[in-house]
Image: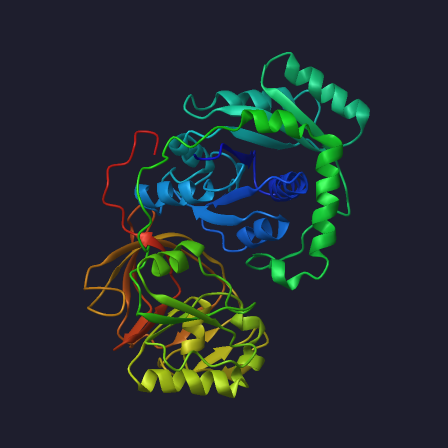
Length: 446
């Protein structure tokens, strides 16, 4: 039997939905409930916070980039063996790709899950009713069943907001959360500072749970949850076919951007997955026939990585044996000859691809991407299609003449040119693979 679920969404980014979600997950686990979770959209960082808060699992669900069967199977996995599923939206409820798809609202409609909307009401009075009514009624196929006022200025403010909304809507008011300056998550250029980098995270999660329990009606929130409409739709297939039968995956604070669906998909296909830490100067498994270097923050640790002789030497030996080596974004940068840090200092990297990348003069590259392989290689035959995203500040400063890995287009299918590099069984790019190109017809809401 599949557990019921709901999605915590918001009117806009930075409205506080992540802390609200974490506080709810922590509070429910303190009650003894088993909580499954998911995060909407291409976000590597938030799922680790869900797990730290007590969720037994956290998948990314992306209705733009993923095949329908992938979304369905991941949602079903999140609801297996738990009491309730708490999803967290991305940006504002209706924000998605530039073509208008891929929003939290799309995922809610696809799964048939109700939405609980977080409204940042700091500095707001009766106008909250217009905002809430607009979100509740904007799409007939999206059920916004609950409202949470966040950053409330006090009891009189809460009463004013409640009266304004009650005059226009019957939507459940679940709570009024006061502004708490001690509830804050530090961030950096690619999002929140990762969960495993925060020494005080447990204390913050406990404080968030106390905040939720004091000001939110959790029992009423749980009554809103319902099972996914896509239960039993399909099984999980690897978003990216296994790179080998024994895959070594870099996994530490410099290489933390790997989707759970990728690892679990490889395991489900029969491949062994063996993590190692380049920052701890660990080499990849000597018996591995493939190495995956995910994205992350190598630009922050370039000096340590340049001095990690066992890691770099082990990577070279694996390459000499003819193993597949694939790098995404930060992993791609480490496969090159040189990584230039923010201060302009060059650091020698693995040298397996004749490229150099630079984090000096950083410039944002962000967006959903469609990409196809240029030639036969580790990621499939020529023309193999994927969907994913690009999110980085670094740039390629040497290596334009290297055979590229992909032809890339944006979410509107406008060509962006070639990207990445491929030399035999070694390849990489700044693109992050989310799933193979969908080939199914989309429901009308997507």
